[in-house]
Structure formats: structure tokens, C-alpha cells
Length: 326
Ligand code: DAS
Image 1 (cartoon, protein in one colour):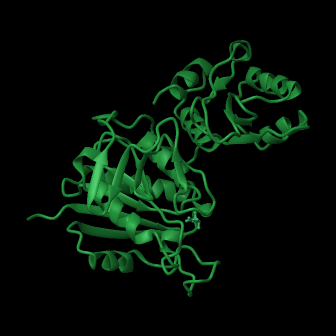
Image 2 (tube, helix red, strand yellow):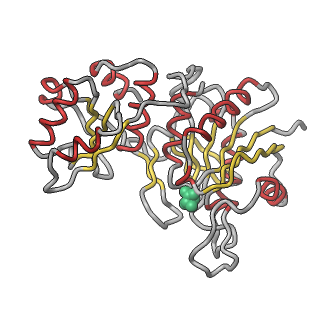
Image 3 (tube, helix red, strand yellow):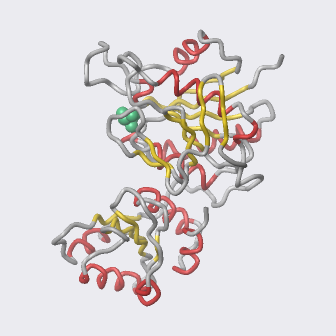
């Protein structure tokens, strides 16, 4: 029987991390090379043919445009390769949601693209890396995984990149999805989807650019002053995402300063510093031309605003309709 061919792009993170002792709390991310990883997983008898490529071996706090550009090129090539059934990207969990969402919006949905990480180093007691990786192989090798955008596999769950965010600093069960929870359940021996694919046959939504316009995030706090807006806009920011209170709220003076920024051609997206819930349009959005982030948290709202600006989409009405897509 012909084995499913899956390309594995390794970038590092805790999934490739070691502590040197099973009981040591501190560990170094990005220590294990992809070849060692692939030969280790071969021992558990999965039938896929894995082709590993080491892109980096970093903690994902250092992830950014250089590496995103290389991953995008490689994923685009793998999509065009008839031999390749799916792609896995091993990644640190800290910024996995940003990489997943950026690729989700800039790759076609014709083949599964799966990000996977771990919360415990490879030599920690109860390490989750190998199980998550085995689960990712099952998802990336499943034709039904295509048409769901980029996926993120952690703790036996499959999340859509549009929904997924890291919601715990330490737990193995670190990711949550909103507004959808997990879109599937996976183990090394089973995979169940909670509904049909929703992006079947879709082309890339936006062109990928390595150099995207600067977009700042302004984190709201009680007692903040309009100076904070000027600071956030300094350094040539072309757009701003408000990580607001509750429903994307901010003190009156801040809202006025943000409205002036919009008048000067800097789009402003209202997101929330609260972990979960929609930020929907309010009457003031119509007068001030703000955009509501809907279900995207500030980190992913920032990526989307960068992509829109890079693709020449600057009108707040048009930006709003892109934020309102699923
Ligand atoms: N070491 C951090 C990172 O690379 C955490 C992790 O991987 O879980 O994102």
C-alpha cells in the first residue's frame, strides 16, 4: 500500500524542547532536530511517510516575517506537489495562533496544513509532544481535513486557525476556540470531525507579503491617557488595534484620539482584552468609522489588519466586511 506523504516543517518550540531532567522546570525550546523527531515517531508504527525539513529551532517568541515568508513559500510549493498529501508545521505554542492565522488567510485550502506544538518538553514527565505529533499526522493525512483552513492540533483537539488562541500558560490543555470550540477530536488511532468542511476549494484570501505595514496594539487600562494613543501610533503605524475593556471599550479621551487617527487615515479596529466574546459594531463605530473585531482577539486582529492594508484594503467599511467573514 502506498504510504501517505506528509511534509513536516520544523520551527522549534517546546515540542522540540529538552530540560535534561524529567523533573526540571526550566527547559530549552528548540533542541531536538526534525530527523530525530521523525525517527522517534516511526517507532510507534504510524504508516505515513514523513519528510522533515528544519526551518528553524527557536522559541516561538522569536517567530516573525522572515520565517513566515519561508514557510509560506514552502507550503505553497507543497500544495502544488501531487505527491504531498498534507503539511505539518511544528511550532512553539506562544505565537502558534498568529502563524496559523496568517497562513490560514494566505494559503489555498486544498490540502491540510496543521500546526502542532506541546506544553511539556520532550523529556518531561507526561510529555505531550509525541502524542500531539502523532495526532497531527492523522489530521494532515486525512483528505477531509482540507477545506477547513489551517488547523491547530493540541491535546486531542483540532481547532480552526480563525478560532484558536492560547488560553493557559502551563496546562497541556492550553488552547481554546471561539466562536467555535474544537472542530474535531483526534487521537493517534481515530479522527472525528464535528461537521463538514466550510472552505472547500477556496483560494488564498489575501496575497502574502513579507513586509507588511506596521500595526500597533493599544492595551486599555483604567486611568490611561490620550498620550498612549500618540505613543502607539509613533514609529509610522499604519493601523491600530485597540485591546479594549469588555466590548472593545476605552475611556472617552482615548476614543476621541482614536477617532482623530481614523480621520487622518489610520484604520482603528476595536478588539477586547477580555478572553472570550464578540466585539460587535456599536452606533459610535458609524460616526467614528471604527471597525469591530468580531471574534478575533487583538493578536489575530492585528494580523488581519496588516494583511488587509498590505493588500490595498484601507476603507473602514471594506475592512469591516473582511473582519466579519468566517
Ligand atoms: N517555548 C514557548 C514557545 O516556543 C512555549 C511553547 O512552545 O509551548 O512558544
